[in-house]
Image 1 (tube, rainbow, N blue to C red):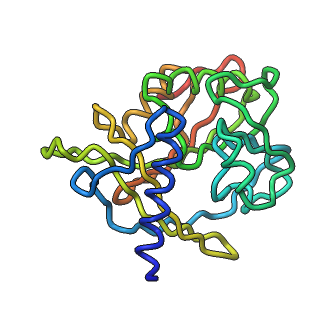
Image 2: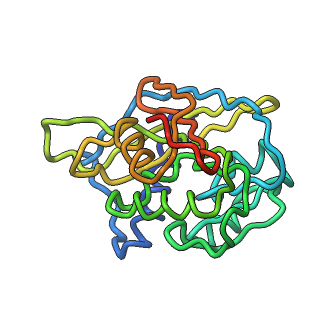
Length: 225
């Protein structure tokens, strides 16, 4: 079976899994699916002191594969954590909207292609929880998709095939998700960051995905955004 077909099947499986959590179990019809071109994302190693909180760290567990025992991976779906590769120090079933960690527990948090599976109405809540558990001066690294703006309203599901290039391996996968009512891309997350007290450090957009690096300003310093 060709790689592209395998990746698309993975995207459909991801859609089915996320939909099952929302009480929807039907496979999307072909006419309802919009499919992005396969995108290659280079995921470079990054410096991080102490433990890294990885939101949505199940599935491929990319951050867990990249940073290993530094990672505390949480996911709302137990099956995703069970199926994820070995690597993280801990895998914990937890909701990003209600983190069970104490204030200022982490110096780094990552959200790797996970916000697309969280209801946009809950994004601000997740951002505020991340701000709470991050220490002053800590970093928040976000990778996510850019949803298309489509005139064809029959297209309700987006499939995103990816190849993630890590320093020592390449991971081929795909994500399937309902297309939100409002166009959702980098600007949406920059707005969330500003509302919740984060400051932008760097950003990158390419095709149908983006990367956003934020920091929680140290006490007494105001965000620059």
